[in-house]
Amino acid sequence: MEYHFSSPILNDLNGRGFIYQVTDPEALDKLFMSGEQITFYVGFDPTAKSLHVGHLLWMRLIQKLQKRGIRSIIICGGATSKIGDPTWKDKERVMLDYATVLENIKSITAKLKKLVKFDNCENPVRMLNNDDWISKINYMDFLRDYGSLFSVNKMLTMDSVSARLARQQHLSFLEFNYMLLQAYDFLYLFENYNCQLQIGGADQWSNMISGVDLIRRKTGKIGIGMSMPLLTNSEGKKMGKTENGAVWMDENLMSPFDFWQYWRNVDDRDVTKLMKLFTDIDIAEIDAYEALVGTKEMNEKKIMLADAITSIVHPEVSLENIHNTATGIFSQGDAEILDVKTYSLPSQMRIDKVLVITGLAPSQTSARRLIDGKGVKIDGKNVDAYDTPIASSCLISVGKKKFVKVTVTDC
Image (cartoon, rainbow, N blue to C red; front, top):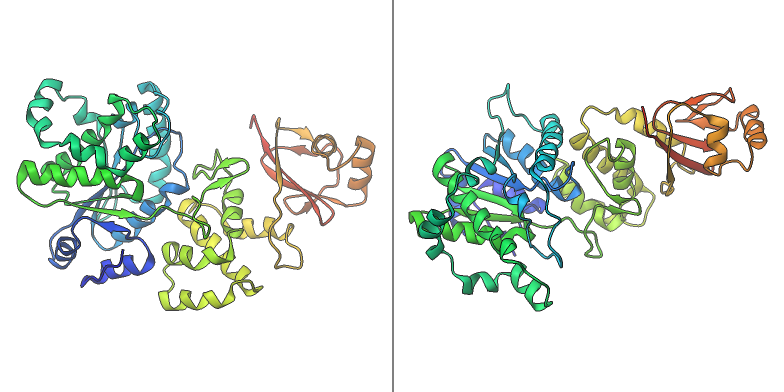
């Protein structure tokens, strides 16, 4: 949907592709032009130990708006994750025990503290757990106070619900309550933290509308919902999937090199869109990159893109080291990085045995000949001894065309 805003901040976000839908565009523009303190929130359910590529947009948005003095609240869905969001899913989520939820929150929070500023700054991000207020709700009181404010007729027309029913997939009453709880979250933050705006993915639109409606019905005031587009490629498929699974932000689940490599290998047609979202390069300059699709020069832009996104997610990692590792698997300096197979092996295993296990050499004797001939490298450095141990995750190469990645399991 096309929007036109007076606010320079909103115009920049819109031009870069952050804005997909807004419940009340005029009210949003007025809020950003008012000079008032603005507070928004984003939420996620800690159903895994790490955030993934699907969370990249709101992470980037928080970083951008935090610099503009706009207050951010991150909600960990400690309560809602016990139910599971029915959005677009054919099956109910696996029910998590609360100990697992808390462990996931701990892991994700540790990562978030490296990415956004929670303290020691003028505009710290606030993190809350909705279990702190939802767990205190008395069910009968909730029905009396809020039940009449939700229309089942309208809820059944919401995309996330109607699509599930159209496919004749089971939708439990437990999941149906998810929409009510997320709407209540927005009302709670609106009343207790003066949070005027909820931002979420396009697949959360139905839940966001419910929150806006609840605020209006309960308080007579305006809350605003703004959705961001899902991160998809030029073919319309969700980004963030590889042969080995999801593209995680946790370095323990996916190495920074593998993360960088994923973005280095995106389709040429996706580069300009991603550049607008994840760099601060002028939009007009990025638009000029369209002419590079299919050329060798686009590879330079892909490296810029991979560097930018990796710096956001892994700010402590040396891009120089990543570049040095990648150099060994480039051909003529500008070809696509190879799809390198990954092996998980015990720490301290000898390199001559590793070469055989990974298929880089047919036998241990052959492996030793390769080592003697200076044909084996670990992270770009020549191996001189047969008993060199594999002490940490690394890239092993034989010659110029054979590569494997090794992750160690007990170091």
